[in-house]
Amino acid sequence: MGEILSELEWKVLMAYLDGKSYQEIAFELSRHVKSIDNALQRVKRKLERYLDDRNCSREYAREERA
Image (cartoon, rainbow, N blue to C red; front, side):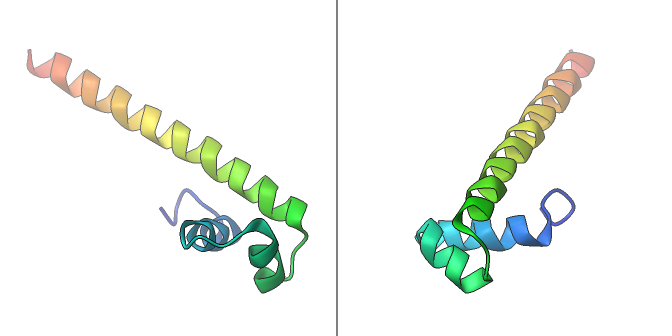
């Protein structure tokens, strides 16, 4: 995941998965709440793209074996 997400995105994601609110994350990372929201939006887009690429690769591999 380190090659996909920036350091900030990774920290925000981990804090969010720990159940922290946007306000708590913003306070801990000395950022504005909007910057936390933006980081999580980027994380979602990047992870969707990553999962789509993996699914396409798996489908292609299956077709090659058939």
